[in-house]
Image (tube, rainbow over all chains, first blue to last red; front, side, top):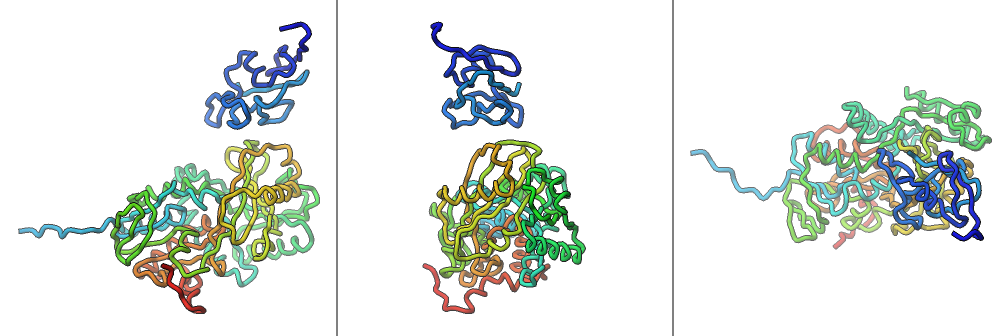
Length: 85
Length: 388
């Protein structure tokens, strides 16, 4: 990564992570090594599948709001992201 | 020498056309009488109007004496629902039953007066109901807007997930399922679109709006509705919520209407209704009307704006010309019986419909007066044209 590219700091389940600006939340989760973003009602792990806002599987809590689509949300500096572990 | 059994062509004693909530209830009731049942359904069980419904088990009052028939009918049916739900815990689980109760919301003095008169009616019938003052209402449902005048709470009402119930009732009936569309009736047999012919002692037509193709013109009409459902947001709403203005608008016949109607589902999703478009039977979403419906929901519950929607869909209520279902002998087709035209109350009234139809068709005494439901009531005032 070139030095000229800005980075943001986001918090994933409270842990700080540096990600490139213009990165989306789903990619940030990937970068943090998380294998899933949420759990179904029966407890199955779910993660981004379509990557384009249709499958709804990548939903996470962002800055206190439930059910945000990780694949369709760009990070901003200081963003708080919570997944279902 | 013992006589060998005579050859028979009969597939079942009763052939039920339609695997929605009404067909399933009828199949189950005939089976309870010891008759064998075949069900003809080309699509998923409970996949039509049944799946598009909210699954509200609703006590209809008779504050206006004109509503007496519907009130008696809904109350008998709710009794039968309770019998079934209470018979086994497995029934309540499978039906995703919750006794959420209904809150009828009063937005002005006129609606509050209506709510109070309804409350007095319930009390007079020995049915549980209470008035909630604004403070108690906001305690019960904190997301509601703050300027409501109060609400009538009917705690015995509930909700179910109807397609699963329909599937279960067909199992209980041990119904033989034929995946096809019925295209013709000749009194003892039913012709299917795959060329097969089914034989039975009688046929029961429970195809909702599609029954119109076997009836004189204009007996049934579609009333299209929209519904929307949110993602899971558990714990936000406890009761089925209905604005009292719904009653004023539900019976308007010349315009599209929307009303606030909201139901919490067990997983925390919120089902948001409702709209009514008379004469429309297409399944397209109407974005303008949907927007109007959601705006009405936000008007009653501003906080809904924070929640995300998962899906929106439409369904078509199979309404009859006078608002009462058609339950009884088909006016023209021999050995055919009808159970259709339930409009928006088919889930609630399914079991009383089945009970009444079975009693009529088997010549048993009836638990309710069948005359308001007689299908031939529509042919007495007009020249009957037999559909081809």
